[in-house]
Amino acid sequence: MMLAQTIVAALAIYFGVGAVVAIFFLGFGVSKLDDSAKGASVLFRPMVFLGCVTIWPFIILRWLSGRRINQATEAQE
Image (cartoon, rainbow, N blue to C red; front, side, top):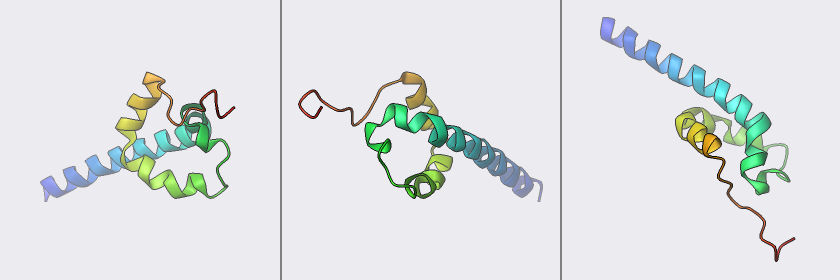
């Protein structure tokens, strides 16, 4: 029983931290890393929220690296 409680507590902490990271990332960071997110619909952020909660360690690494994706090229501007 103790092992099950430990696992549940660890998952609760993991997903709790993930929810906080996802809120900040979707509120402030996603449009800085991905140019396509700037013009996304209103439903974009709620749709990707659970994914961000799940993979939050990778999101933090990408956010800290500052590498952009889907960056507009000079020909597109």
